Image (cartoon, rainbow, N blue to C red):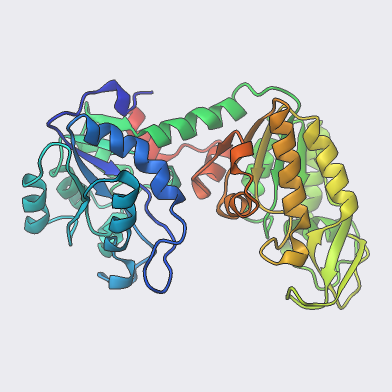
Length: 396
């Protein structure tokens, strides 16, 4: 796979698709700059060797064109501080103003263009819009793993206009290398930990992983659908009643393929969805009808941790409970601790998905994880075995 290190960009206009879709506070200050930090190696590489850096991204989901609250101007100061370098901003991403701002750039300059999604043509994968973006540059670089699963104008279509000058950025290249390390020739035992609210969003991932892993641990809200499917009483816990047959099918499939499917044993339950709610603990299949399960219990944590600590390859996507509430964070925190300990003992660990990454950062585990992915949906689709349009466009 060719990446930006394979070419000298001096004197060239380099348009880089980054993922600056970061959270802002009410004063439009960046709350979490992890995605910006992740893009710095590619930006620095081009700028320091004298390339002209043109950065394109989206921010949020604008509904009706320009929206000042979602302007990429809000991230310019954060980027400038991180780079310790002046960063300019253009109030558009195509058109005469943008062309002039790009033409005025000197070698080593960095220019952020306005939010791509102010134009509906971006998400529509519009060919004309992609061509207008491509006309701004000599070289195209995709460094946005978080949007690599989208066939948008800036993530996939634009690459058609750079048949010999399209490259992976250093971040996207690193993402793919680490995902391949986990999936293509993993050291065993290989354990996947899948959490989150619903089975419906993870069906394809679970079925795909059955062909790869030795152990598959289920946690989070989806565990209660499995518990009910095998005859449990789960009270007011989150459940997908229309997926009970599917849950039973997945259990049977794991047995057919010789995969150790591990479900929670016990549950931490509350009478309200609130940190201050009354709490009782029980077997996951015997929850009081007035209570809802919001975290896995101590026996589940012990069982999951035992399996994780024996693993040599670990992939984690999705929390074990409502970790944002202090009284329901133990499952996610202690499973995370077990992954960190296994990593220190030589295991390869890969964590991805917005909530999982948030948990890792909240509990300050990031230094003890082998690789923290910047992609949620993109990572899931890669785990499912799907081709990512943003990746395929560079490989073509």
